[in-house]
Structures are given as structure tokens and as C-alpha cells.
Length: 547
Image (cartoon, rainbow, N blue to C red; front, side, top):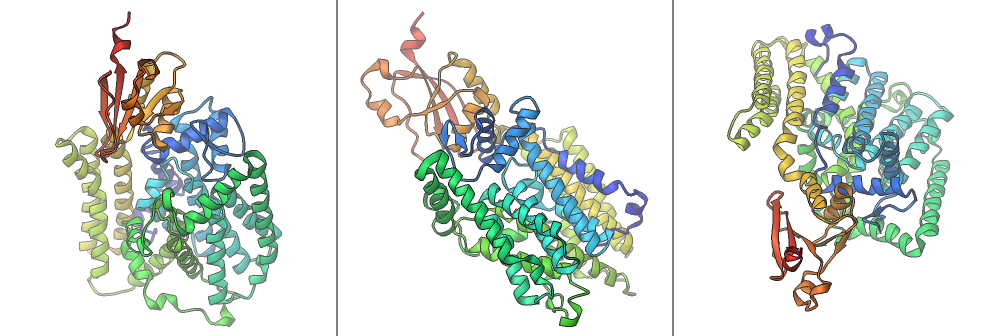
């Protein structure tokens, strides 16, 4: 889909960065949403208070991931005057914007500026990128590191030899290692191995693979030694085996076990609303390899992105632990591929002389119209009313959808291209604007947790049952108090009244495991957060009767 539509040409050279910046900032005005955001924000807060190599959660060792991400968020906290939700979210937003800038520069140099703009805008408006780029997560920072690594590797293979490029390649892979562990370098290494094996580029030795493997091995060794020095062998075992090897083969208590073909249906959802370009790009004609004599002068970046994605997807699929957010490192490469193929398809399609737009185009139009209208209609149904925000979003969505339908019915291919991009942008923007007010009540525990902290005497920890990672993060982050987990069975069996805590917080996940405290307690307040989480604050009656 070309970005040469008249409307986009008249917008001037600043329309793309401005549009991407606005999209990045929309939806950031919300609290920490369960389950992941409170954990990452609190670990970073504790890292800022007590800098070290081993992350902690609620004062306890939490070494699922290396410390680089937490160092970054902690540095933002320090620079911005203290822990804050915008500070934590800024890392993901900045990393995602930087990834879009790299993708734009890469596609522009490899093909043309219209293609660079198309790749960046398609990625920014895709479902999984749109969600993850606004989430307090490790994966956006990992995505930036792997995208830089993939770009510098392509530059070495296709354009020029440079020590600076090799430094960028292996430096970014070391950063990926220190952000999320060996999976970052492994994804890029698998993609490069498949590309070199299948396409046999003439200049593959520019990668200096032996040097790169040595650098990564040294970085991994230094990381392991540093963890062992600070936390001992137990910490090293927990990081290297439980949270790396065991997650790969048998997640067990680490969770997120999914079947082998999990990404077979997750990936098409992640690229919405751009499912039709994915279908088009998978045509066998697009997978023909260039003749060997042409590889030195005409390396195909779309093919490079496709092969890299294929290998990365295989690695992610072989792992027993799978989540939708794990797709983030391959999405820029995927949209490099889809953007170039979509542009080529659109340029060829404009040469047609018939008066039909074709079935594939109308399928894409249907998806884009649904995409633009989905958020305001869902908000209308959810609230059973139309507020000004929903009305404004619905009006913009209807205008964008009508423009796309009109230009398509009139077979105005150039205008239809611009209308398609605008429709995708409006749908993403509407989703980001409407999601916080619609979901805050069920996803943001912050206001209720702050209120709980105000009820307890100063300096007293929060005694709680049903404590998980989310609750162990929410209480320290919002209330500034440690969490002391209690066994509810012990509370019921306790005969010594003086040993019972004055205040008790019970988390009920509606799984039949939560147990109400004995009759010594009265319920002070409760709050549900969706169908699977409720918090109940109890107080001892004897304490309540005391003067």
C-alpha cells in the first residue's frame, strides 16, 4: 500500500514522525495494569533504592531476567525525581519509537522512503505492537536491541563492510543478553544462520561469526560470574537453570506452557489489521531466490526479513513457554517484509486497467473498517451509553471508513491507499484513547491499594493471604509497605489471639483456594478487579473495640 497518496504527500515531511509520536503518547495516562506492569515497576523501584545486579521483588530475590531493563527504569526514576508510572512506561514508549525509527531508516535505505514510512506505520498500527509499546514490559527494550542487531547484520551482508557495523551488531546482542538472557542473541543467531544457509550471500564472512560467538560467550560468562558473586550458587542456579533452561523445555511452576503451534493462530492476530498483506506475502512467487550472480548487488531485504522471521518463529515455537509478547522481536522484521511486498503489490496493481479492486482488497477494506469501528462500538456496548469520547472516536472511525469505502468503490487506487493507512491509524488511536477509561476499574489496583495503606498504622507491613507476584508488587509500590504472606489455614487454627495480625488482606482469585479468616475478623472493605481477582481487607474485632 503506497504512501504516495495525494493526502499524505500534501501533509509534508513531518507527518510521519508526528503521527507516530502522537500514537505513542495516546493511552499512557493510566495506572499500572495487572498482571505484569506492577511487577516490573516495583522491581525497578527496588533497584533504584538499592542498586545491584540481582533484582528483588518485595525484598526477595527475583532473578527471572538480567538487570539491564531494571537498571534503565531505575535510572529514569532517579532522573525524574522518584518512582512514577509515567517514568516506568516511558522506557517502553521510547524503545518502541526508536524501533520504528530504525525500521524506517532501514526500509528507506534498502528500498525507498515511501516504503520506510509504510513499514513504520503498519508496524505502529498493528495489534501486538500497539499493546506492548504502551505496556511496562521488558520486551520493547529487547525488541529495540534485536532490531538494531538485525539491521546492522543486513548492512554487513548486503551493503558494506565496517567495523562500526560489527560493533553495533555484537554490542546490541550483548545488550539483548543482559536485557532478557540468551534468548535475545539466540533469536538473531537462528535467523542469520537460516538466511546464510538458504541464500548463501557472498559476504557472509563480514559477520565474523567466530568473533561474535566469542564476544557473546564472554558476556554470558561475566553475567554468570557476577550473579554468582552477589547471590551465590543458588542465585546462579535459579537464573541459569530454572528461569532459562527450564522455561525452554519444561516451564513447570514458571507457567505459560502452550502447544507447539500456539503462534500459528497468535501471529495472525498480532498483525491485525494487516492480515491480507501477510497472506499476499506468503505467495510462493515471493519466495523465489535471486540467482547467485545477483546476490552481491541486489540483496532482497524483504526476503531477509522473511527468513529471519521464520527462524525466530521456530525458536519461539520450540520453547515450552510461550506468550504473545514474545513475538515482539520478530515484528519489525515481519513488517519490513510485509511493507516491501505490499508496496510492490500496490505498485503493480495500479497498472491494472480494469475497473475492479479485487477480492483481496475488499477483504482488507473489511478488516480496516472493523478495526476502526471496533473500539468505539465495544465502548458503547460496555458502558451501555455514549459519552463524548466514544462519540468522537465513533465519528472519526465512520469518516475514515466512509472515505476508504468511497475511494475503493470509485476505484481511486491512490486515494484508497492513503485512506487505508488513515483508517488503520484511527483504529489504533481510538483503541489507545478508549482503553484506559474502560479497563482501569478492572486492571488498575492502585487507588484501592493506596487506600489500604492509609488505613494501617505507620510502618506496619501488610499481612496478606493469596499473595502472588502482582500483590507482592502492588503493596510496596503504591503503599510503601512490605507484604508478609500468611497461610490462611494457620490463621484459622491459631488459638493465641495476640499472634493474629490486626489487619489482614485476603486476595481471592475465585479458584476455591481463598479462605476467609475466623470470626475474630470483620470485613472492612472489598473490591473486585475483573472475574478472577478480588481484594478483601479485614480487621480484628478486638482491635476495633479497643479505645
